[in-house]
Length: 453
Image (cartoon, rainbow, N blue to C red; front, side, top):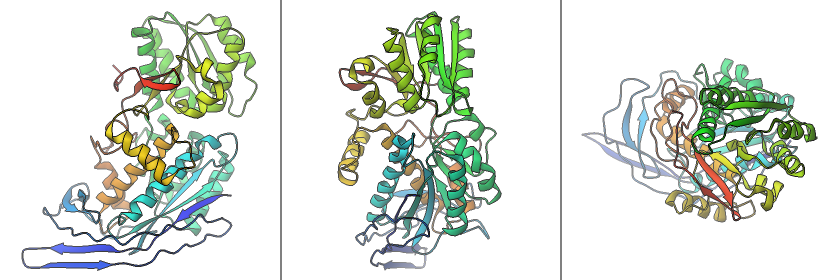
């Protein structure tokens, strides 16, 4: 198992303001690294002491869903939820908040490992800026290789040995499914998990808040784009034969038929399959003018290369889970030219202030990682959402107040993606997708963010 972990004990700022009394308390200390059994620690991060003055700016709410406007230790105005009486504070101390993660740092899906590493670096940045309500985030992530048995093992270790407050950014649909009941039974918040599968967000579960758009509405949007913008009549879909793949496949097929297109092939593959030549042949023989490649990077890039070998060059639209430099590199620039993909964020090299901030972050904190990785954007975006939830959870943080805080995030514009919406019923952060295209060695935006019609 591989583990990354950092922790920093720092100066926090505690204060209260009332009509009769103003007090200010500041404390600071040096950072130290700790270890976890059967795991290897990453370097500890040393944070500079940050002093800031914060004050109460509105009256406290009377329910956990309502909040009081306050100012956090880093000086940013934030609305917090009310404390929850007798809330579970496992993993929270005066100086730290322990957050756990499973992710594929090795194996066939290791390309997605950058998600956790980017989140790790983002938490380092937050810690250097003073943390959250005087506490530092200790992020502990283990390599599960995208294998269910390992996912279950390391999740139990995180919960029962490491005593984490919450899980964050766990990668994959089958892996998250395998620990869902365990986390629910133990009342562990599962924030920013990396899957858009309907089974994980519907019906809404109190502990669960995903970061990716829902695959079902992605399938709808892709079919609508095929009919309205690509103007094709015959379409096909290549998809992973599990909950991840079937969500978008089924919604794509249903919407395509509504739009009057003929679905001439639905070609599945099993996770782990490496020879996809027969699937590529079936797609070619179908005569589809457009193929929706609903896969992860390795099989998706493989089937696209196999289609090219056959001389089959349909219009190709990828699921957003392949929108990354690793895909373009795998197929090569000649094959990649004009391929379209969905995305819940703007292209990384866009001129927006948010993307410039992200690029600067990558250069400073992750100079040795792929600077143009969309999967790094996923980690960064998820970490932004988690931090917002922790801030809203307030100084008297508990698992219960954290979940109420996450539900309070609606129409929030503070992340790299389109507006974040949870609420009581929402468990997928984003409800809109851009269409982008690889052209002349770059990924450019084709549309603004669109929602299903």
